[in-house]
Amino acid sequence: MLAGIGSRVDAHEAGIAERVVLIEFDSFEQAVAARASAAYQEALAGLPDGFERDFRIVEGVD
Image (cartoon, rainbow, N blue to C red; front, side):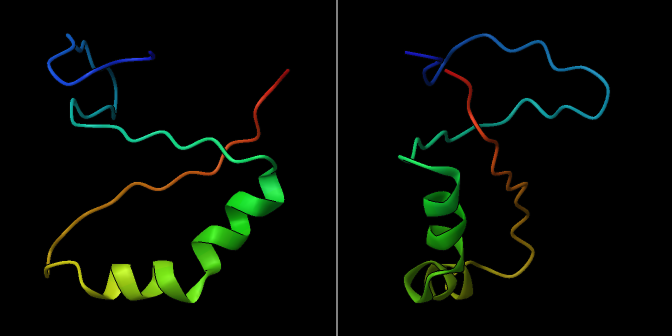
């Protein structure tokens, strides 16, 4: 487990102490394709106005 709800947070600089969701894909390309998918774009369209997100795709290391 990386962190759970209720974990302590000490955010710095531009960091915001809010929830983080981490999803692991089999490859970087699969992650990029998932974000570009019609299903994901439809989910984004359903978010309320003013909803802010900080989305990052980061290649992992072995």
